[in-house]
Image 1 (tube, rainbow, N blue to C red):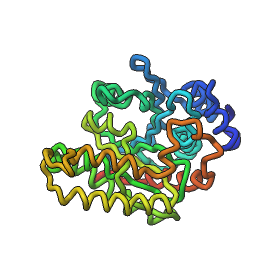
Image 2: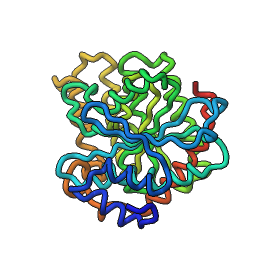
Image 3: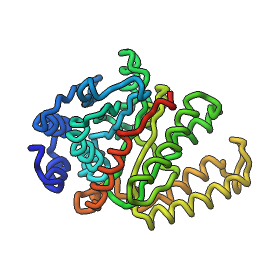
Image 4: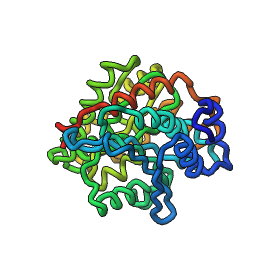
Length: 312
């Protein structure tokens, strides 16, 4: 695929069920004059895109990793989950490559996000990749995982990672502090220059979970239509209030049912329509909101310019 192809053409090509997405992404980046680095761990195929050395400076703090998983659920076109985010990174890569000032940003196209996590999250590709980074001495990294960013006008910065750590009594750890500071930084800086709506909500995990379990700050960014995001926030607030009345003990029950089970069932029931499309045949290019692409282009540019020196 040529780097100057139209967005819709690129999306229809990458969501074709016969498309080898790993090859497609590598081919696109190469045609754009860039040098993608393939990383294979077992059956997982990743692509790392690092820019010229002059675009990196230790004065800017940790290296920012903009990540998007390229795999899709079997049988699904995977347009919003997660071809849209992949294409958004692909299209943004030439601009980051041509930057005149250091931005400390790399791009990462991950695999096996859709792995069956019923056994262990360690089967997720990002967990294996996080382990690989640590083995290579690449420890000063901050991950921002873009997932389901092709529908909507509201940027959602996930609270899930912090809630996950807090539920495991890790809210006093350095990792939690870094995550919290990262989320606050994104909520402050992105709205300053990006036109749109912004919320911080609990979301399903993307493959930031695997990086998080390897000890890296890793946060999920997604998009939702404003009416879906608003309704979901209202329903989540109600759910949290209801559960708060049961206390914090893991043994607490609601009408004889463990509170954790009640939460999981009700959380599944209030999923926004956009999230319900994932993993199915209806997740097509025609279901996307093309206005999400210039919106995410702005978000990516803001993130690339963030100075992370205070988030070591």
